[in-house]
Length: 319
Image 1 (cartoon, rainbow, N blue to C red):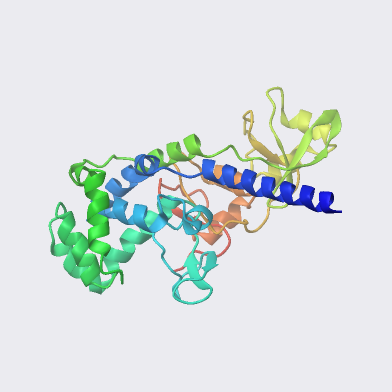
Image 2 (cartoon, one colour; image 1 turned 30 degrees about the vertical axis):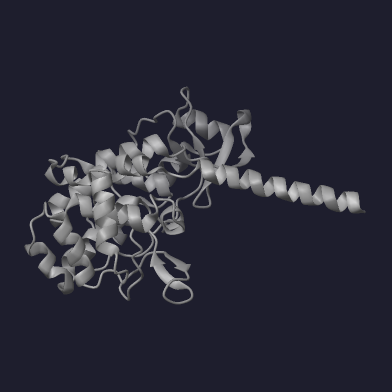
């Protein structure tokens, strides 16, 4: 009995150590964090007139280089809490009180933008925007004086991060013209390709996947609407209708083709439009009917979007 207990204990210890080692590998270094998000901070500096050095230092300090629970599970790099007008997803975490409510973002880009907007639109931070954008020391002290943080050493902490990493150089950087493209490249470089669960095997050994609780396949090189309809004993017209495809649509290898009607809403709350992305592509990505996507965003059918636009996927866009 003692031997069994000892073996179980060793197994548990190994499991803990292995899990711990895996988590350690996923930690983001300070250098990696700066390289990943500095362009976003510079872009926000142009749009919101907040020093990029200050934004970066706050992100580093408040997200532990992107390794905090809020950053990893909620894409919230600045600890922004829920407000009465927040309609997105939420993350509960003990902070000033038990189960404090924090905002959840689909992408870190949204967290950075929300943080900059928060500072820009709150009256108590108005005096900050009278300061020179290159005077990071005055900005650090000004944030403390305006009540941003209760830690009396907050300005010194920001200044040390800025000077140790020469972040003040970002305040003289010319912003890039397309921040959405840069963030898209970050996602493609750092994130694993989305994996879908195989729910069944169709005719000719075709794998069937599930998205938004809708069955779909991935188009092969030799596929046509006729071939897919034969493989799954469907009418070609159903494939066009279920996927909102025009009758002259040409299938592209690797894209989704739904075998069932798409839903009226998606599982995600919203989507940030990327470069050259169409409404149909977004509709296919989330398994939401194209008409519903237009309606939820109060858009005329056929209207186009622009990179950086926020599209609502579950609720209607607020008026």
